[in-house]
Length: 376
Image (cartoon, rainbow, N blue to C red; front, top):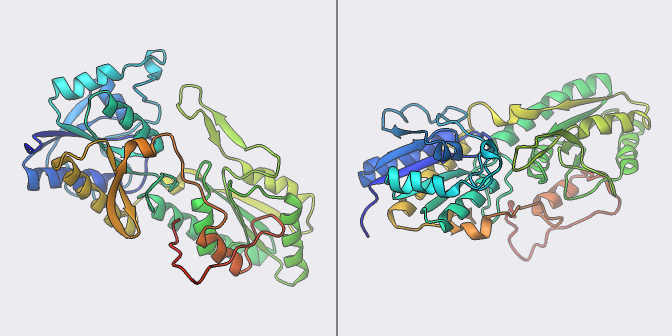
């Protein structure tokens, strides 16, 4: 197989710590190891549709490893199969022709979450060779144990919980921290465990507000006099609805979740003697310098993606499984979401140290007869 001569790269969907580290790794690997030219699309798939791209050289990616955000820009609205700036028309054919026929790209590396992987799968079927790199702070992509950006988001949320500890203890309050994550509870689960939250509420386990209040009252009466609650933005009560912060009509994912911490604050204030306060962490979780773990994971992902391009392994996404780098078919990842299972080992760890998930009689125990990978 002939080595790749020109390769495109783009960052799609929401921003995430580690994007620049992947851009750097893909670019340097392709230039230094393969002698290829690299072209970056501006603002994700929008650049492919609007014919906006730029060369990426070694100088362009120098010094960006530690930077948050993305030097290429991104968009979570630019779906070429339903392009919002063209009346939701399918302009994917234009995008393919620009990348493949005009720019003469041998392949495109798409860095993003489930939406980006779904689009990449469609473009692959349309004749444009694609390689995916899994990015999302939500950690909800199928068939990869970890996505870069998740570790940074968990570290930020954990620090917030640590800081809430002191004010909760000082004022004997119930403090509620709301994390991101959409319909998956990975951030709330891991940050809640790392920060020692007394209650963790995730979308995968509908909560009972009376049980949450019972836990808070038990701590009041037991002398601890404060409670920390970590709640995912997608959490909802039994038989209830998600808290919707905003509806963005021209977005592929129009519902913006958020505000469940305010709902909990109001409901618990009516049931408890303690004061209840809320903190919505929001986009702070997405920004800033990536952790060392996310930098190294992003670098490994980017280098592996470059090797996949060189080997002609198209229509696939880089993944990590059981500590090893591998790849999975984009078709298997597209339009699917990886959620927290009730028997996840981290759920068991939380339960073992007395954490409540807001429901009665919810228990799970480790099976010591077999290994329990923490991210499954």
